[in-house]
Amino acid sequence: MTSGGHDNEGGGTASGKSGVERAFERLNAMVDGELSPAERAAVADEIAASRDMARAHATLARLKATVGALGENLDDNLDENLGGKLVNMALPLSEPRPSRRWPWMLAAAATAAAAVFAAVTWMHEPAETASTGPEQPTMVSLPALPPGVAVPRLDMAGLKLVSMTVEPPGHTVFASYRGPHGCRLDLRAAPAAAGLPALTGTARRHWVVGDIAYELVAHGMPPARFALIAGAAEWQTRQVLDPRRIEQPLRQAGLDPPPCMG
Amino acid sequence: MARTRHDALHDALPGLLPRLHAFARTILADDAGDLVQEAATRALAARRVPDEPRAYRAWMFKIVRHAALDELRRRRLPLAAPDDDVDLWHFDDVRIAKITVEQGLAALAAPYREIIALIDIAGFSYSEAASILKIPSGTVMSRLARARGALLAAIEHSRVRPMQVRKG
Image (cartoon, rainbow over all chains, first blue to last red; front, side, top):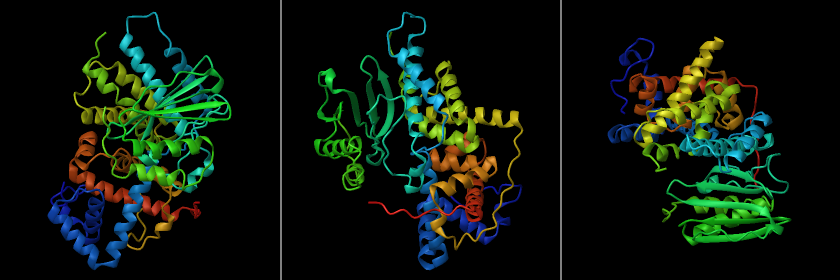
């Protein structure tokens, strides 16, 4: 995509645009990484030479980042009944079903229901977190979760919560996180008294908060990175919302993440 | 039962849901959850599914978009007039915050909200967005610039002033 020869919406032509419009379009394309190398260099020169251009470029970059964050940290006031409905969808589907006619659809629907549920949980963040910035890590906390259970957010490290199920008996919570390089983490939160066997993975961290035993396992993640993430996860579940213990380790873990193996 | 290629593609659906929801919300705020659920149901029931992940992703956004536009037409919602009365070169960046951006997006005309959501929330390139919207790539570029100008104007005219929060 280049800035030359494009259509002008509304029936006009590119040549009918003002210089200001063309400059603003080029700045937008610059921010979006849509310019050719030559155009990019030319716009960079303009930015270096003009304080107004530099300022507008910074404005667009900030606008783009803020809009983009809307898709990462949803805080809509979603109807709580919807969350409950999706929990109910996820629970029975996690049990064996006698039907064999549509097995793949059931499995897919279960996955989708759990994932929609997970997405819904992102929208239940307290309203006051909205003004603290789009990257503020916030624990998932729902009335539908068993009492005392908190599911940490690991987005700052590039790991998205992709599914969550609540399984009786004992109301064990399973959550899965995925990263862009194949990294995978699984979290289990269960009553400590249940004494569940350890999960398998290439790295593991276990801790207890109150009556809840947490276990976080990685699959192929480098140990140093896992240690940063697991520590931040633990502090979140302990509700110690200290940026030095949560934000900084997660950001560090998210910097140039090496691909996970396996 | 052996897993099919389509099953593998559908595995990507959970990861798409947050951005599908955010995209749907920019078009139709109050029913975004229902739209995404409907789209996911349609996708899982579809007989023909795009063969590769990027095409599958674009296909899912198209399904959500069509569902949202159908609903907009059904409701006959009026489209807000774009307002670009703002000095783009001296904008006070402090005003750009999540809450003002959300409110600003809600005030834009649907085509403007849509193009911003496709590029900034969904992360599509101009050419991918052009394919989804069935318009030339150059039109994506000019529409996006106008849309962002309108969004900045909406933020400028908003009565909401972001509060500066000190972390730590």
